[in-house]
Image (cartoon, rainbow, N blue to C red):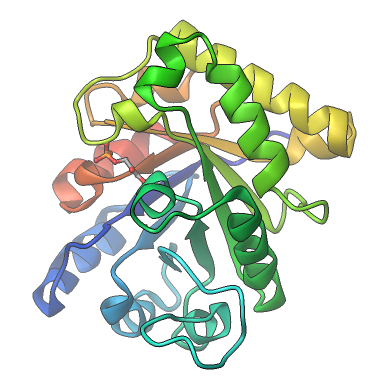
Length: 247
Ligand code: 13P
């Protein structure tokens, strides 16, 4: 079965109540067959989910704690995200790995927490510039995949995003051949763990400086099943052409 592409927006620490107008424009304008997910800051999840109900736009969180509840000041559980109306959650974003020291084991636990709450986990991997320069891109991505993607992963409960750290927010992207190399490698690595049939179903997103101008060529690369988009997801005018490119 052909994989349905996903256009996912990660708003990071951006967006106030007034930003709902961008969501409204996205809901009104999204056409085509791609799945669309917006991950606003947690403060907006409930309002966005209410607004997006019965639309084609799904709402996700940007992180979750591994536990369902407890003494973890400032954290949010996957159950809370689901309760607020989220259907997805990003785990292991490089900004979480760097800013909060999240290990592969921590990311794996968060992915399992997402499933426990009925959420789809969007698990992020990607090398730093120094790892790429050292020729260790596939080594890093392979270690993160094996460490961060739990054994219970299926195409239905998990999406994987390849986000080279050096391409995030920089306007720089790998060449299409470099993207293809990593995505082919990820598909093969998943096949070695889960079997070819199961691995074929996983959506593998590319993230890092995806723009309206480069989305179509990136999404046309084999084994690229859409994108995880930061800056260009904040305005419907930028994100709608990216949604169209994924359709
Ligand atoms: P940019 O699209 O702003 O480079 O961010 C990518 C990203 O980190 C999405 O999670």
